[in-house]
Image (cartoon, rainbow, N blue to C red):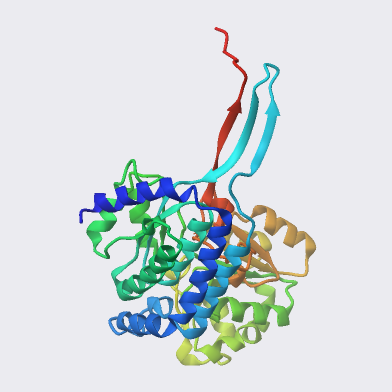
Length: 416
């Protein structure tokens, strides 16, 4: 089958999906959640085929891996999405003009949403659930690393759709080869918006080469600033959680920025990281503070390239600053505008940080691990946008809708 046929099938399915009732949408998503759990053995078997082809030390390995508990969490997210309010047909604004025209602004689907992603099979479930709930058709281009997992998942989705008499092409999985990516990037007239999820290299390529509109879900180069008034106990727990909860995700901590007045407490602030064998790349002053207080085999002197790096691994940089403003400047210079945090008991510093730091999500005294659609009450997410056009941060149901103007009259014509 030519790639064009995939796109035409999706286009036709888009005409059908608008007639699917909100009640049926809820039923499909609940049934899919049940089917995912029921097919756990099959999913794990197919996922293992993918895992067997990847180096266990590859940072993408954890993203690729499915487990029974992760499948259960995926199912819970789909149920959460199902139970959220129906996002379509909302009257966003309404007015009657002096000439009698009634004008409404009404929420509608984006249309056909293309998603290019790498070794994250959970994305296949998440994207379908969010797109289906919002009346969008999804065209999925997963990486070859997750080929077996994605094929198993799309079959489960298609089986559930078939039971409800719904066109299976509301969810299209393209072949894993690179040529399919090229076709998707050039699918003018078929794709309404393209969303890349993955490495900075993938995102850059899509942004630079796509001929269809792109919403950029950027890499997460994440900082946490430990202020001169930061609470040490809070800081230790937050840093440990933000760095080690899941190192392969985009909201994981990459650089700890520390006020120089707190260097004597840096060993205690970093102590728990050694439990997870986190390798630290520290600047001169931070290195001197940690030397002898942190395992030698896990402590390195930072090089310039360690700042502004998304590690996706048990690695972290530490930067020492002499003032609050210097901390802000370091973050501004190296941030990818994803998630940034401050640990402080100074209300003024907290307010300035929230106002000045340009990121999709900014935190005071909390772990950046919360930058997640489900954690933000969105049910799930299709990605975390780091741009400012249309959507920013975790993209849930509202971010997958647009609007149209509905104008009702009674014979009005416009005069010259």
